[in-house]
Image 1: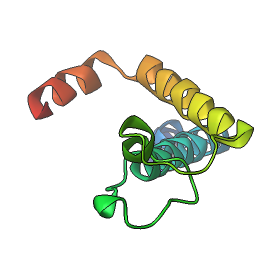
Image 2: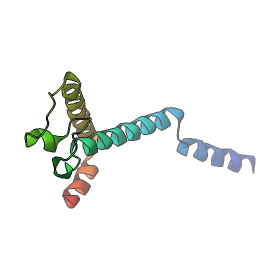
Image 3: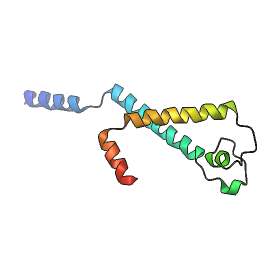
Length: 104
């Protein structure tokens, strides 16, 4: 009976998620969520260019409707979004890529 319990406890321990795995999962999901939020702002609808955006917007820049000068912060945000997107893409598994091909 004790042997069965220790074997069962061993199986549970092997399947238990370790603290390091939780940290990796948490930061991976947080990074992904931040990237998608940044892309949503960058590619947000221009609403017929009625109101100038506080954060750079692709539609305003592409159509020449951004009336303020492009700031250094805008460039930094753009490059950070680009870097984080490349990092996200590099972490995709083969299974993730197959799934994405089905969506696109």
